[in-house]
Image 1 (tube, rainbow, N blue to C red):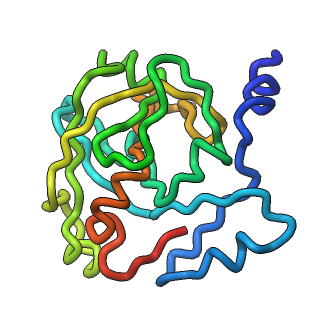
Image 2: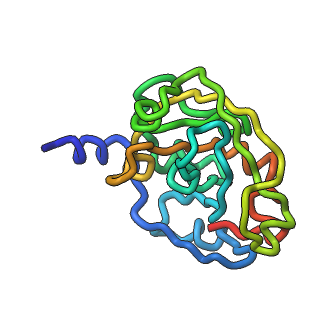
Image 3: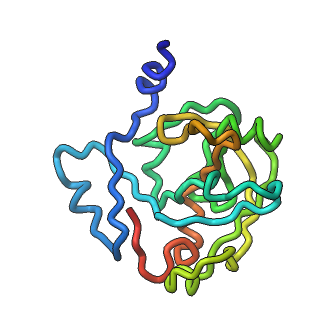
Length: 181
C-alpha cells in the first residue's frame, strides 16, 4: 500500500507534461520561470525496435526520446532495479522496464536494434516502417519511476533510449523542424 508513495519520495517525478507539437520553441523562457524547478524536453517521435517477436508494436514499447540530460538527473530520477542508467551522451545505451525483461527475456547486457526514421519520412509525416539508420544499442539498466513504469494493459513493458540518441540523430527523430516538447 505504500509502494507508490515510496517511489514518489525518491524519483523527483514530473508534475506536468506539455506537448506543443509545433516547430522550435524556446524552452529557456520556461526554464527561467521561478516556479520551474527542472525541465526536460522530449521529442514526440518514435522508432522501431527490431528483432522482437511479430505482433508486438514498437509504439507500445518505445518511449519518446528525451533530448537533454536533465531527464534521470534532475527530473524522473528512476530507481535502478538492475544495472545502471544509460549514459546521456551515448546513442547506444537504453533502459527497460521490468515487464520488458519478463516478456522478452532480454535484460542488462543484451543488445537491441533501434531503427530510426529518415528526415524525409518525418517531414512529410509519411506512414510506414522507419527507413533510417539502424542503431545497435545495449540494455544497461532496468528502471522504474512514475514516468518510466509498466503501464496497465501492456505486458511487454517499455524501452527508453538515452538522450544521446537525439544528440547523435536529431534529424532522424524530429525531421528538419526541430520540434521538441
